[in-house]
Length: 295
Image 1 (spheres, helix red, strand yellow):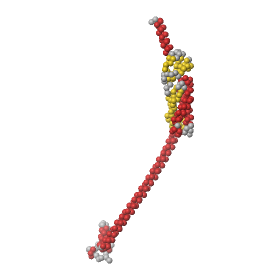
Image 2 (image 1 turned 180 degrees about the vertical axis):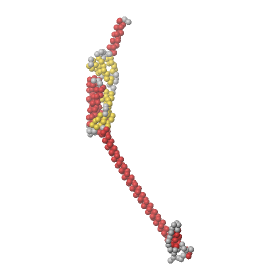
Image 3 (image 1 turned 90 degrees about the vertical axis):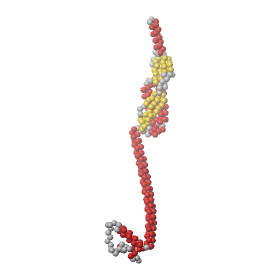
Image 4 (image 1 turned 135 degrees about the horizontal axis):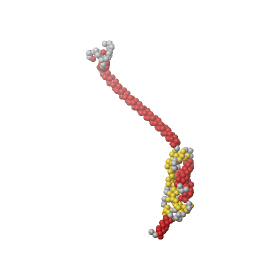
């Protein structure tokens, strides 16, 4: 290879090197800053191919995608001076690469620290103006919107934009939660005791009503039984009286026979009476016909 050809090859390599250093490409997910001897000469180029002065300009790239800053749980005081444990996260991105570089040194760690400080201050202010009930039940969306707006007002000059602030968890301080739980448990116990007392009272009332109805039913049944028994006794008495009036001597004999049957029903019965006692009036007679009629 001759020296002339070698020179052309070297010139071609130099031309390619210089030409490649004169262009740069900006991805749609990036922000770029063009420096000239350490000074910013251009920034925020649109995505695509761009030109720069070779060997004089250099390019620095920054991630322009949406980034997430997840904060550690923090304690915030409410209007009632009660501590709430708040866990939040922030969605943010770089909007102005030049400001991001000059104000934050182009470091994501610096951006996260400044964001965390701003968000923390805004949350502390918003929680301090609200009650626990408002924070937990009704105003969370409003708090997130206000914090996002306040943070954006302070970070716009840093070249970053806060897209969203979210409260993942808002809880009472563990000590307060324990006291609240104890109060709730005591309240539930009181309600349960009250319900049990009401149930016992209702049960006693039902038992009393049942006992009263039972007594009424038994009394009515006893009354009915006595009426029926009285009617039966009256009918029996009428029958006995009619039989007695028809044949008095036969009725006397019949009663004596019943008395004998009842007296001598068991062999252990023992009677000590006179032989001529009225009890043996019919027992000693051979037949009822031989007995003299009673006056």
